[in-house]
Amino acid sequence: MGDIYDNVMELARRRGFVWPSAEVYGAVAGFIDYGPLGAMMKRRVENLWREFYIIREGYYEIECPTVGTEAIYVASGHVKGFADKMIQCPHCGEYARADHIAEAHGTENAATLSKESLARVIQDLPCPACEEQIGFTEVFEFNLMFETTIGPGSQRKGYLRPETAQGIFTDFARLLRFYRNKLPFGAVQIGKSYRNEISPRQGVIRLREFSQAEAEIFVHPDEKEHPAFGAYADYRVPLLGIEQQEKGQDPVVATMREAVDAGLVANEYVAYYVALTHDFMARSGVDPAKMRFRQHLPDERAHYAEDCWDAEIHSGRFGWVETVGIADRTDYDLRAHAGHSGDSFTVFVPYDEVRYETRTRIVPDMGVLGPKYRGTAKAIADALAAADPGEDGVEVTVDGERIFIPADTYEVREEEVEVRGDEVMPHVIEPSYGIDRIFYSILEHTYDEEIVDGEVRRVLRLPPGIAPVQVAVFPLMTRDGLDAIARDIVQTLSGRGVLTQYDDNGAIGRRYRRQDEIGTPFAVTVDYETKDDRTVTVRDRDTMQQIRCGIDDLPVLLASLLDGSVEFSALVQ
Image (cartoon, rainbow, N blue to C red):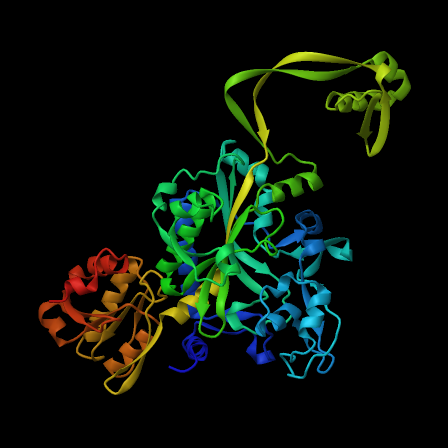
């Protein structure tokens, strides 16, 4: 079959799935255009994702701007820490990711090494651009965000978003009200994100503008049992945990219940979305035999994360490719935005029964504070009410100024108070999908070649729900009224929401081959028998088997074949 990547990308460019962006101006690495078939297939993948997360899980979709003000990304940590380690080749001047060079030559998890260690590792390795030995050169950090300005005069700095998640976090308070102030709840977003990659040389796998589908699920920090866990408790998934990686072992195949009970996966929420992700990708056309879930090692996992797993898909050219990240991010994101914005990012969780607690309260002597502090006396009193008393007094902060209030200006009282619940800052479970990588993986895993009648038949064995064109309709000849019958069938099927393509160009065998190449699952041929008995031939892409079907029965039959409720093999006599 040759190099699978070259074969897939040749077909993708020739048949209108993807091609380089702005080729007339030389194109720029890291940007692609989705052609007519690619754009439709990508939408079908996204809509399948929506079926899982919106229809099944019940998480509503929101849409936020792709440009965000600087404050968002200061709070999220992207301004300070969203950087890759890079070098500039001293020979050819090209820039490259230092960790990618090291990993390409056998150094595992090179991204976790310090800049100094990376410089030592790569000094004897060849530059990926000119292949000269790099020698000792500086490794430095490069922030991956695209910077822009908002409004005239460059008064406000902004960034193209590096992920869709931050819009969901900043909308937390409004989403909480939308979900009637109850945990758990979640929101999803599908859209473009941007990362100014240093040297993207992997086609669709590494892009500077890419599509993400992310869900942010807000849960009680002490209640991480997924309410629908039973749906995936017995679902088996290949898991490459920390222990397996450290010992050089293969993934273990375990049910989600086994994985949680053994402590391999941190909790039911993470396990549930590991299984759901495997289910989604298998239904979208990714080969289950080329999927695994790899747990982040301690030195690569974010310090705040309780657990993190990457869904990895095997590519013939690129090896194991990270495609989805599933993480328990604890309360890191909400706490960061609360600290920078001053807003509350908590949920009031009522108790089943009212509780009574004895609490210490500071009661200021306003007769002393008023004359002494005048305009700030009330603010000081409010700050005292929320403070803990010290032996000699209390230090409070008012308008950024730290003020010491001596103990003889207030009274400390113990009071019994009624407590109806707690203010809880939720933890965040985040499944984050790279749609473009999934798109490419589907193309690679469904691409096939076989010899039929002495010729190579190239076929994309796409699931019917993912195929860009669902049905092709051919008149055997463009005369004697056959073409008119075929066009009527196209109109009928299109009216039922089936994307149908009419084709009368060339021999019937060539037309079948064209549709096989783009993954069209079913083809309908109108022939001279059709004029006699109003039946047509329906052909299955994968087996090339054919059946006869009445024109009036065709819409129902094709609908059942497309949604999978009927298998074509069951119809063959």
